Image (cartoon, rainbow, N blue to C red; front, side, top):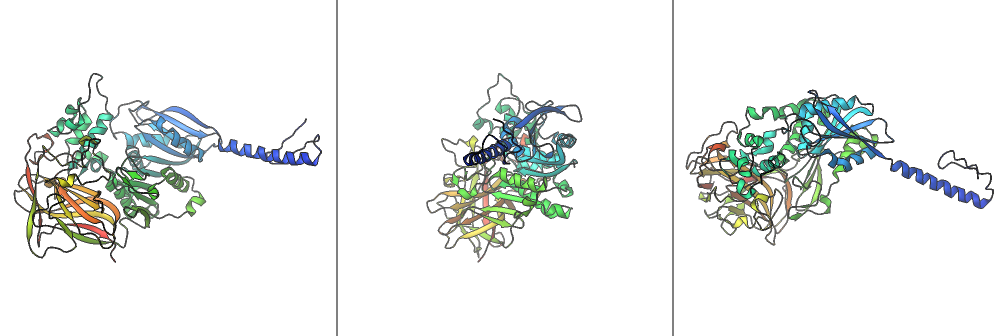
Length: 594
């Protein structure tokens, strides 16, 4: 039988088949061949080529290039990671199948790349050199985007401020533009984060068994934590012994350079992420301060109910936020890059709200033009008591009405030897395993060194969205002390869900650069930043504010002596919160009022 097929789906010249029945058979066969051709096209092989790409100093970085056989020249999506480029294979293949060339690279000194790993130290110039190399390749259309989160997000900003030609869009998820603000909040160090990351990314001697982190994180002076873990970690020492944002951090403070960028950026982060303030702040800077008007219009913020490891998921720590909390971050990025790398008309035609944020409690998404969203009013909720606000069974109240006359100050003792854990300790969650996400705070609220202020049951839902602050009037009998504040939603069944958290070290109350000791007994007004948050507290729930002296080990303990990271002495601080006319302690919520 002689068969000539011009193209899948075209008529076939088959002289030996004359019958009407045969024509139907041939049409069915043609349709089958068309289907097979489409399937072959849809499953075209993605080829991977591994190269050693040279940087300006001759160091070569292991780099995988993923290309679909059907794509000769395309925009490029680049990921630079210290966590093993090969683990991004699945994502790279998705980008390649979507019409991009995907480039995955091991950062300097990690996995298969040459050089020495010094956290973030070389990422700006290595990012520039890599993008410059990419734009010279025959398969690159000339437009490059970058993707990834955390460390992999920060390298995007580091490359961007070097202004590499060809970088046309970025999608930094949960990351920083100031490395100091990554590691410190209110002068307190994110101890378990820093120590855990450095320990996990530092070569340890083969004959050393790491110490119990429950014990190691309690070591004083702070400068000796690496020794307590078991081996020298110079970067850990450096980070923990520079608690002020001075010149040590200048090289990794990019924030002032962001307004110079002409660059679309997709910012994604969760409320419970330790990068929430940084990521939201980066968006605000780019949207409001970028010198290029078009760049201001090319920023997007996705703000969800997640912590650092759960972006896009529905369950975070102990709270299930419902199916609507799920976000396909890959789809978000493809849409973003289709818009700004492919410059695809269909992508441009899709709705583009600059801000999309999730409201916890009612668990719904909202669109806004900026952050904080408009139409919300700063509203004060006052901390009040008869001087006995200790524990959730005490007399602490949270009211819209300010006290008309002086009320007794509330007092607690902050003992560095017995710090309040950042979240309640359980058999399954020892103190070293404290989480950033939402968990029931009730056990902590039974401690005498925690002040608890609770509203009456709400007769109507309370909705707020924006950046939350606690303005407290405080005093202590030691040269230094911490004030940690949590905003809590109390359900009818008693589950106390933390919504937002902040901390301030007393000696940094006026300036992070110029710390000043506390004077015993003197009352100071302080502002504690609780970060971005959006929620609806349901009817029948209660609103609560917790105040204590530590969030250990998410933040380092304050020894209360004011001696800093090289000091070993500790002191028990007697801390007070005041609420009286002229010294009103209150939390400020951006509320939608009736």
